[in-house]
Image 1 (tube, rainbow, N blue to C red):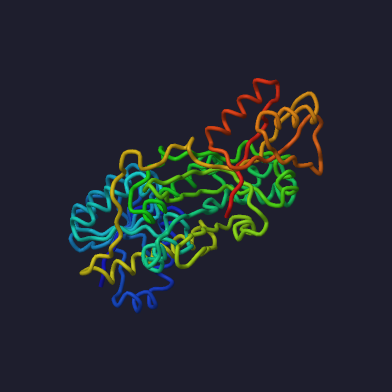
Image 2: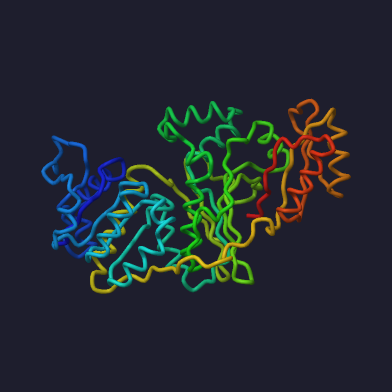
Length: 414
């Protein structure tokens, strides 16, 4: 029998207990032994549950019990989760977590501690919730050189954008609906400002390319400035707007990595990923593009991935799974300004002709887009093959000539 402890009894933690209880027999069969939850750490009281007698408020009870072999961290946040997980690994206990902030900020350090102690630190649920992605990249695609990863990594923002596209709902109303349905937090900034997607693309980049990427080194832009006019222009262009996290390995060994809204062509597999669903494209030199699709969050989907990692841990007590990346290196993330891009730009002036003529003069070549529902004095156009620095400089030049830049959205090639 394998004894485990669960840190946190919130949405995901209670889901983990539910899955372990309702699927106990099949899980034991797959793990080759019974998995027993000995402790559940939470400061709240949970009377009336079948396992109410297993709750504790004292982490040290878990830490100092040699019978506990695996600790499941589903508390979320960086503290005290980091301190608890580090202590567990240093005291001979493997750890499974769904905590993306923890893995994105402390993954390299915790993996090194796990390796030094011949333990496992597993985090399948930290990126795609119930979508298998960590294991496929580290194992199933191991024969490939992964060159690029791009995806819709946040269900809340994808739901909001889907409502804006399908129902012409403005951002504020779509966000309010997402909150009413439980898809968005009361404070939605981590989702709508792109921070959640940033943490996830950092984990994928670290895993795929073997070097830690910290969130504060990633250019991150959310969807709060997206308007229905932008949605209209995207439709005319031939696509939709999605919040995309992407990373690309360069020939010089650096990576280009960013999170931002993008025009995605209707022919792309990512364009049809709607509502709260996520889609992650992995580009390998042998496989080409492989897309992983499903619900990226939710109680039971996330719990399912957590329990799968627990089973994996139980099966690898004596043979540690190889999951590792090195800590960050100086200048590993390429300068954002050097990244080549194509973009849609929405501008305003005294009239649309003036705006477009000035834009053509500044950029040299533009492709105007004609909105289905034009706004007086506004215009939209696309530009191609500029670096981010060149694009910013030319937009500043537009502003200097009396043309206001209302919005800028990159164009994807996925």
